[in-house]
Amino acid sequence: MSQTTIRIDPHVHSSASYDGHDPVELLLEQAAEIGLDGIVVTDHDVIHESVRAAELAPEYGLFGIPGVEVSTSVGHLLAIGVSEMPPRRAPLDETIDWVRDHGGVAVVPHPFQRSRHGIPRRHLVDCDAIEVFNSWLFTGFRNRRARRFATENGYPALAASDAHSVPHVGRAYTELVIEGVDRADLDGESVLKAVREGSMRMRGRRQPIPASAHHYAVGTARKSGYYAKVGALRGRAAAKASAIRGVQLLSELPGR
Image (cartoon, rainbow, N blue to C red; front, side, top):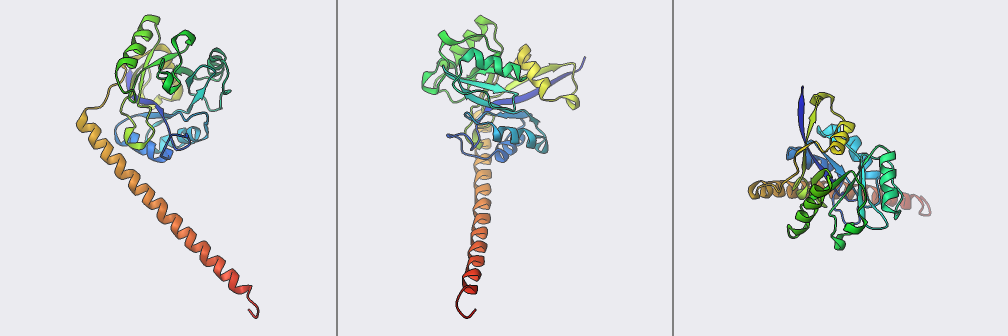
């Protein structure tokens, strides 16, 4: 039976998030550069850029999976594999049902960490998976607690970078083992099925320091180049618009 292993970072933010910094094109380019097979852009309470990222992903050799980090009444929830915006501030169980009804998987990110709107243990109801490794936690305590909770309660466990800028994409990721499907036949639904079934051989890790340093440098250079190009294009557009306006004003002068 065929077996395919893929690497996914299922929790990444773009500039569409209030706390994100970079466009999805740069996030996708970085993911491809460091050897991931896909990312899920999960912006806060908006989904339009994630849908666009999923559509663009094949151009970068990646799987395209849309998603969103939606605010529920008790904390944040990752809705992975949905292309519509779930209801905001709804009860957690209702939001989970909505995600499942729309073909997605409901993942609890950075649980128990109230400073980041993590869902408290007392409110955590049946979900599809738990994020047990979030690369942005300052200490390993919350990650260890999340892993222990997932193990004790039989939840599939995911790892994610929770990246808010290009250099941090892939700091942590989930490695999925998908049985009976060749890589050429893989699609987003195959990935979602593997998450639901807990088909993980690795649940993520921090990259080694030398690799992280290299990826940070590459990502920073890519950002600098991108924004320099955007600035130059905007400058030319502004100059062109100014010149056109100048010609218009001259044509309006008396005697012209």
